[in-house]
Amino acid sequence: MIESDPVITNKTDPKLNAETAGVSLLRGDPKKAILKLSAPMIIAMLLTSLYNIVNAIWVAGLGSDAMAAVGFITPLFMILMGLGAGLGAGVTSVISRRIGAQDREGADSAAVHAMGLMLAIAAVVTVPLFLFAEPLALLFGAGETAGLAAEYGRVIFAGTVLLLFVNIGYAILRAEGDAKRTMYAMVASSLINMVLDPLLIYTAGLGIAGAAWGTLISMGFVAAILLYWFYVKRDTYVSLSWQHFRADGAIVLDILKVGLPASLEFVLMSALAIIINGMLVLVAGTDAVAVYTAGWRVVMFAIIPVVAIGTAVTAVTGASYGARQYKRLRVIQRFSVGFGIAITLLISVVTYVFSQQIAFLFAYAPESAHLAPMIAAFLATMCFFYPFVPPGIMSGSIFQGMGRGINSLIVSLFRNLIFIALSAYILGVVLAMGEQGVWWGIVIGDILGGLLGYAWAWLHIRSLIALPGAAADSDDPEFV
Image (cartoon, rainbow, N blue to C red; front, top):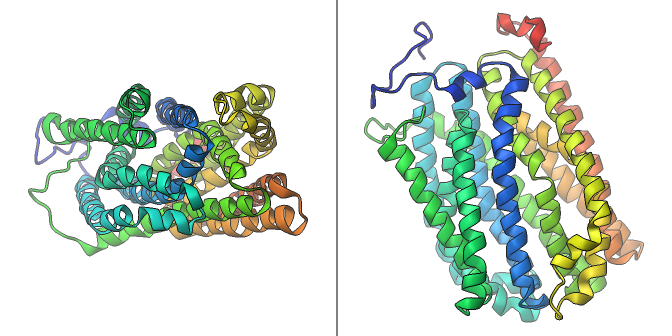
């Protein structure tokens, strides 16, 4: 670790200074860092999620069976996203902590190790998912829509390596405070997707597979952009050069301490989606799955600002934790949760007022028009879900930034498989409230999970502040 000289040149590219604007931001005022890092990510993630909604709208034109088929593949797709995002969370945590500790070589090594892990995972999971797409869809309850689900899924699964690489690339940029460049890549991907979807689904006559091909092509384009930035332009703070690479088990373990639990969180979310789908089929049939699939896309879009703030929180927390400035963690939690709640309250009002208009977007075709009233009812119910999302997400992001991925995983486990799943089962099945009982179970479980996550993170931060040896400037009144 080099601490004495504030300007450390990059051995592989001497023209680079040690500290970019993004790195300076990470080491400064945490409130300012959260605002500046989250703003580009909010824009980028909103556009990405908007693509998902647009994709669902185009798929809706193929009928409710096609919508349900995508819904049955979604849990598997979430697992893949979780593998990439989980490793990315680990990399963001490790790199930002090393940036806070002024260990640039350690940051570079973590990034290269992450790429190696990504390639290994892609090599292991791609072929089984591709070959067994239809049996897996049947296992999840797809029934007669399993063929459509497999048609969509096989294309998506073929691009696993692209999906994982893009997620890791984004995570590296976020870790060094370069949220703007991440935004550019994500926006480009979304726009390409939105243009390609109608062309491939309808003009080219590919049907549901066309939606998957649009996703695959856009990921390939973004992967090329990331490779250009890292290996040709080479103006990032973190270097991805393999020239001086030496395998280090300690770095792999550090990444996996956050990456594996974070990946498992997505697995838990996928497991919850499978459970919810099963409950809905049990109490109301496959149309209820179509309603949930369409409505949940809107929910995911609505909470994107909170998720974006959470990605900023992980990086800012890592830098503060690496520098042992523990009082900043208290500021990070309070500010990020308050910011998130303010945004979600506004989202709740807008969603409630326009629930019927939003529902129409997913039920414009004659084949799916009968779903509109239930989609609108689902969206109105979820307005009570939104305000309790920030405490859980921000607290989990803080745990990840500190390198305590297992804490975040435990909170997610309680939220998804205990609070939400149990509440949905009791209300929807035991009390025979049907699909609306399942929806309210999701809301109740979210509230309990959010409160648990916030309380645990608050107590852990308090214990850190009480430790001897914290950095002296963590007592600066600006951060108290």
